[in-house]
Amino acid sequence: MPANIPFEIQEEILKHVLSTKSLIRFRSVSKPWKSLIDGSEFVTRHHKAQPLHLLIMYRGSESYEDKFVLVADDDCFPDHKFSPIDCPIVKSAAAKPMLDCSHGLVCLLGYHRVQRKSMMVLWNPSIRKSVNIPVPSAWDAYGFGVCPKTSDPKIVRIAHGPRQTSSMDRYAEVFTLSSGVWRRVLMNSQFKFLHFSIGHHAIIGGVIYWVAYEYDHLSNTIIMGLTRSRIISFDLESEEFGEVELPDSLVGPDYHLYIAKLKESLVVLNYRKRYPGGQRVCDAWMSENGVSKSSFTKLFTFQDNSSNASKFYRIIGFRTNGQPIIKLKQIPPMVKELEVYDPRSKHLNGIGIYGYSFEMTSYTESLLLLNHSNSMIKS
Image 1 (spheres, rainbow, N blue to C red):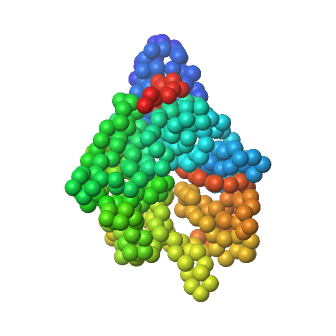
Image 2: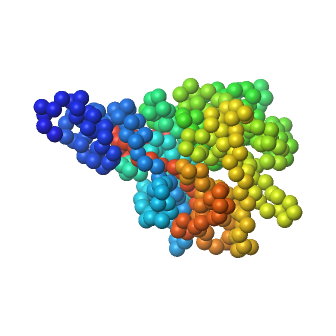
Image 3: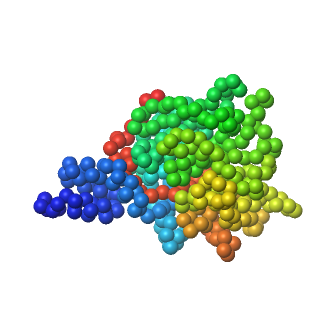
């Protein structure tokens, strides 16, 4: 680009470049360009302009190795080719649940075979960089998100069941990538005796949500069947815990709640059995702001009416148009195909991905971690 073009015009031109690979090359043109592209404002703007994809993790039908594939969430879905991507920890780690994706960073949790310790991995597939972070245990409840104000990735750890006595406060631990250290954050007193479910969480608009259950500290057990599920939130900016007020239709003691994300809204999934027959069904409710029970509206009720060869298992995520992605449970255990459900026609359609242990998150490209080398944070 000619040097006599004012930098303000150069900046506007670069803002309209959507290709992540091109922007990485442009960083080497000059120091002003590098400084601009590395800036948090530019990174945030670039991320918001990216098209949405579905990032799916599954165990291949011909091997026990986890695979990752990107699927464009557009009008051609699912009639297009998938884009397989390499994950940096597939061969070195085991049991890698996908925690979530925030601002183009994917968070994975597993056990590192070489390091012989539980590990959290922050991974940016678009620039092929990752940071490994040792964690005390893979069996605690975790949440992950990028703070909207600072663009700083944060991990929240909540011990698996409150281990403190009634006379002590309860703390969570927060890790920020910029500091590289864990620190304690005091939890609200009303959350002292809650058990936070592992893996039942979502990150929406700078807030992490978990499903939690009341915990009997005297018997050291979860009071299943006697207490309702609760949804607890954590604001990444203020670092304060809160609770979502659920409608009466979601507070029964026998309800099994999960949470998911639909665009930037919180979805609560209530799994139950319908009698006679005992078919497993799911009621999906969405809240625009995730706080008031009056904001929840029912999206649909799903019940698998397919043959006896399969049973409805669970919803693993949503397309932007509101269609849920569903995995079915095979009887006997067999290779499964992911399905997309159309609430209007009530039809299930396969999307051409076969395997085991499916997990899914929405994904958009990002430049986060551009200034980080592939590294391991020391515990």
